[in-house]
Image (tube, rainbow, N blue to C red; front, top):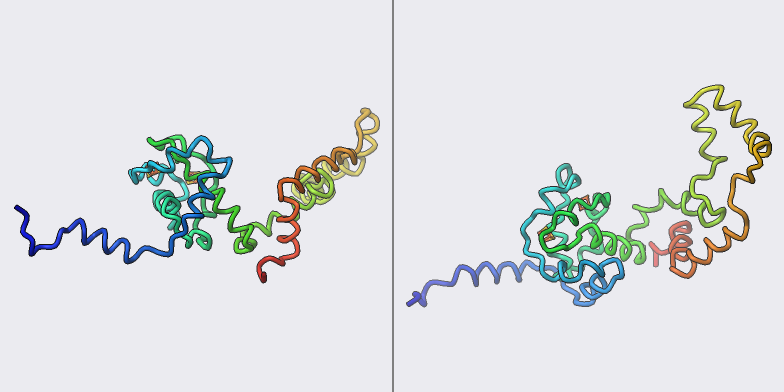
Amino acid sequence: MPDEKKPNPCAVIAEDAFAAAPQRDPELVEKILNDPRMHDHKDGFLSCIQCGVCTSGCPAARFTEYVPREIARRALEGDVTLLTDDSVWYCFSCYTCQSRCPRHNSVAVINQVIRGLQVESGYAHKHVEMFAEWCGNFYDKGMGGDPHQLFPAIAEAWGEKWASYMDHLLEIRAELGLGDLYPPDGVVKEVQTIMDETGFGERLRKVREGGAESE
Ligand code: SF4
Ligand code: SF4
């Protein structure tokens, strides 16, 4: 017979854990679970056993305060503090966690969903604005790394022969029967349609303008 005067230690631990639990939003769990990128990981997401294998193999966790196991737990709890947690940006999508998880969960994908939500809210513009120029070029010209921006910097590093080659690049391309450096207008239009239809164009516009952060 258990001693009724003594508190159940497990109950105390659970009570403390819930008392310390941040605000939870079941809709956040649904958003993560129903994201198309999670389609192979739904069961794993719901059955995470908090074994920590993801953390043990994560290069980002080794050098930062970022903890994949905690991301998996907090995502399953619908912990809204994830939406303002900068540590998810330490993940660099190497997928080691995904390949090792015994439940086939994917913290890599969970992070991608959370990052997307952070960008949508405007919170994470500081993390993505450095890519805005590259993405802007992709939207405007169908090519992220604009040769006319990149080549001068490369020429400086690679020396005079490269610079001379670049000076005559268009002539050389014409001699070889190659077209312009940029994709044709029709292709650019298709790229823009895809980016607009997926909502990427609108996100990019907000990041470029920095508008959503004050919304
Ligand atoms: S390896 Fe998988 S099951 Fe283990 S804590 Fe990480 S996400 Fe959960
Ligand atoms: S994908 Fe991200 S969370 Fe997973 S192991 Fe790599 S850096 Fe860590």
